[in-house]
Length: 328
Image (cartoon, rainbow, N blue to C red):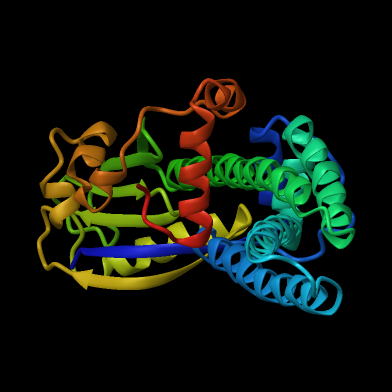
């Protein structure tokens, strides 16, 4: 009985995280990184939670200062002060989110330093201006800082996420290869696919020569869509456990979020919809992420291409991602 599964890579252990760093072109000891690298959905949630909490705290602090020290402002001046407070709180919150996760912070510091440090320096000056009652200057500096810190955070996350997916795809490929499968790989946009197939007499020696396949699509958010074909009875479950064990040995911890026994030896929707029994066909069949396809990304050259994009578009996309706004 074959099955279709949605699997989440819930953690990368230190061994696989070192491999992730290598994909980013980094080789840096991180003694302070004592915990595991969490999944991409959990990392997004953590960043957003940190930003929301920090924004509330920071805004309250700026408003309190305004009430205590700026009693004689005109209506226009007060509106400008409130606008500066909101913008400063956004900048503070984004910087706090960036520093909340050691891996994100490390990527930003080492790969985005030229963008990050001047922005942090400008934010410090904006805070001082605000406390000194120079709200116009504070607003201008805070606006610039907010834009740069937000795009830096988003860029660091994207670089980490791409390396995360690459490590997953390599680990899946290596695990299936160790299990005797012939591997075909493909990439499109922010997704990668691996098709493993082999010929044999079945795990329990059923006699007839038959093909078994395991198809895996690593989706944009790091989840793995898996489909299987050619298995009988409980063979598919045993083979899936072998794959999970191979991933565990390579530092990838996974959990199944959804399991759909499709009872079809020829495969479920992912395999049966593939245009050709290969990895590229899997990407075309994986309609779950079709709306998120973008052009292929090369990790080591991603910063150069990102720098060519319009700065306003980059900021709007980054702000929408962090604050879950609708892009206008």
